Image 1 (cartoon, rainbow, N blue to C red):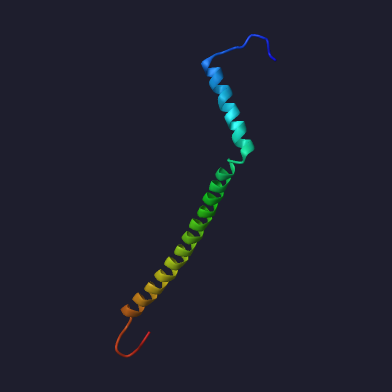
Image 2 (image 1 turned 120 degrees about the vertical axis):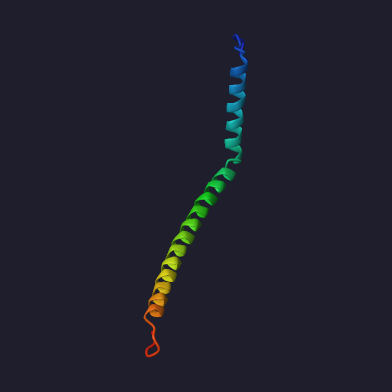
Length: 82
Protein backbone atom coordinates (compact mmCIF):
# COMPACT_ATOMS: atom_id res chain seq x y z
CA UNK A 1 0.00 0.00 0.00
CA UNK A 2 1.06 3.53 -0.63
CA UNK A 3 1.32 5.32 2.72
CA UNK A 4 2.98 8.48 1.38
CA UNK A 5 1.22 11.79 1.00
CA UNK A 6 -1.29 11.87 -1.88
CA UNK A 7 -1.29 14.93 -4.09
CA UNK A 8 -4.83 15.90 -5.00
CA UNK A 9 -5.55 18.63 -7.46
CA UNK A 10 -8.59 18.71 -9.76
CA UNK A 11 -6.48 19.19 -12.88
CA UNK A 12 -4.18 16.31 -11.92
CA UNK A 13 -7.14 14.07 -11.11
CA UNK A 14 -8.68 14.88 -14.50
CA UNK A 15 -5.41 14.19 -16.29
CA UNK A 16 -5.00 10.82 -14.59
CA UNK A 17 -8.59 9.83 -15.36
CA UNK A 18 -8.17 10.93 -18.98
CA UNK A 19 -4.94 8.94 -19.43
CA UNK A 20 -6.47 5.85 -17.81
CA UNK A 21 -9.46 6.11 -20.15
CA UNK A 22 -7.24 6.43 -23.20
CA UNK A 23 -5.17 3.42 -22.14
CA UNK A 24 -8.33 1.36 -21.62
CA UNK A 25 -9.67 2.38 -25.04
CA UNK A 26 -6.38 1.45 -26.69
CA UNK A 27 -6.38 -1.95 -25.02
CA UNK A 28 -10.03 -2.65 -25.84
CA UNK A 29 -9.63 -2.31 -29.61
CA UNK A 30 -12.21 0.47 -29.81
CA UNK A 31 -9.77 2.54 -31.86
CA UNK A 32 -10.22 0.19 -34.82
CA UNK A 33 -13.27 2.24 -35.80
CA UNK A 34 -11.03 5.25 -36.33
CA UNK A 35 -8.77 3.24 -38.60
CA UNK A 36 -11.79 2.14 -40.61
CA UNK A 37 -12.90 5.75 -40.97
CA UNK A 38 -9.45 6.72 -42.28
CA UNK A 39 -9.59 3.85 -44.77
CA UNK A 40 -12.99 5.03 -46.01
CA UNK A 41 -11.68 8.59 -46.43
CA UNK A 42 -8.73 7.33 -48.49
CA UNK A 43 -10.95 5.09 -50.63
CA UNK A 44 -13.39 7.96 -51.18
CA UNK A 45 -10.57 10.30 -52.20
CA UNK A 46 -9.29 7.75 -54.73
CA UNK A 47 -12.79 7.28 -56.18
CA UNK A 48 -13.31 11.05 -56.45
CA UNK A 49 -9.95 11.38 -58.24
CA UNK A 50 -10.85 8.61 -60.71
CA UNK A 51 -14.24 10.19 -61.40
CA UNK A 52 -12.54 13.55 -61.98
CA UNK A 53 -10.08 12.07 -64.47
CA UNK A 54 -12.85 10.23 -66.34
CA UNK A 55 -14.96 13.41 -66.43
CA UNK A 56 -12.02 15.38 -67.85
CA UNK A 57 -11.44 12.75 -70.56
CA UNK A 58 -15.13 12.70 -71.51
CA UNK A 59 -15.26 16.51 -71.54
CA UNK A 60 -12.23 16.68 -73.84
CA UNK A 61 -13.72 14.09 -76.21
CA UNK A 62 -17.05 15.93 -76.34
CA UNK A 63 -15.33 19.27 -76.98
CA UNK A 64 -13.31 17.79 -79.85
CA UNK A 65 -16.44 16.24 -81.36
CA UNK A 66 -18.38 19.48 -81.02
CA UNK A 67 -15.55 21.41 -82.72
CA UNK A 68 -15.51 18.94 -85.63
CA UNK A 69 -19.27 19.21 -86.06
CA UNK A 70 -19.10 23.00 -85.89
CA UNK A 71 -16.35 23.11 -88.52
CA UNK A 72 -18.37 20.79 -90.75
CA UNK A 73 -21.45 22.97 -90.44
CA UNK A 74 -19.46 26.13 -91.25
CA UNK A 75 -17.94 24.60 -94.39
CA UNK A 76 -21.05 22.80 -95.58
CA UNK A 77 -22.63 23.47 -98.94
CA UNK A 78 -25.01 21.55 -101.13
CA UNK A 79 -22.33 19.88 -103.25
CA UNK A 80 -20.29 18.06 -100.55
CA UNK A 81 -20.70 16.24 -97.24
CA UNK A 82 -18.47 16.12 -94.17
